[in-house]
Length: 260
Image (cartoon, rainbow, N blue to C red; front, side, top):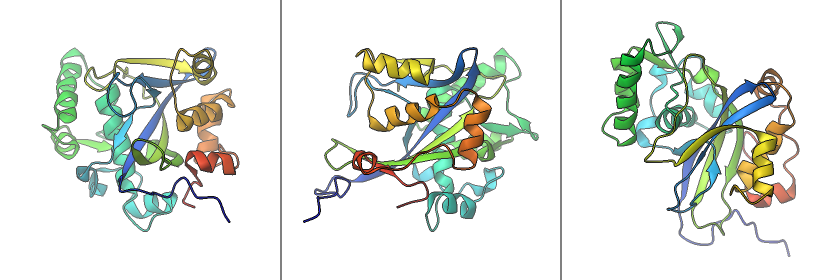
């Protein structure tokens, strides 16, 4: 008899769609990724993770605000019949809400706040967006922005096993930290944020200083194999960054990129 698939739900716990983003930069000692720590409450307390969250209904139908990618292309990358672009939008929205980094273009150029006054204005937008008092489409139209979906690369796909306290169908993405912006954590959603080399984050986990789960650990191990950001992003862009999705990894929730 075949072993039961741990990804198959045996109860009525819903599987929520989500997106996570690796914000990356080239550091003096190698590739660095921005990680945040979740508060000591909720379903997965105190975890160090990449910025991300649940797909919101308002993240759908925004192709008119996206540069370089349409829904057909996005869905094909994810192995879906349609509705792929919303995952890119979620990743961009969550990056702004949790890190204050907005992946967008204004007047054809990568978005960069023009000074302290504009930085303060966009920080207000960020707080309003996180509190759902504003929306990403409204912000984009108000500030003449287009979402930089062409700068966000599809990285991997994970589905939380049925034994977890909550279940997520999560698409991971990666992007180069834009110049002219600095990440800073949203106090309502995170308690800390830091740039860290993947190998150092893994060492902190091994030493019991950081708590992380399999998708995060596996992603960090992938990043740690690359010496430069250009090599990493080049591999991601061509799908050469991931190794084999072994039975053990699939048991932990890893899916084949583009669908099983």
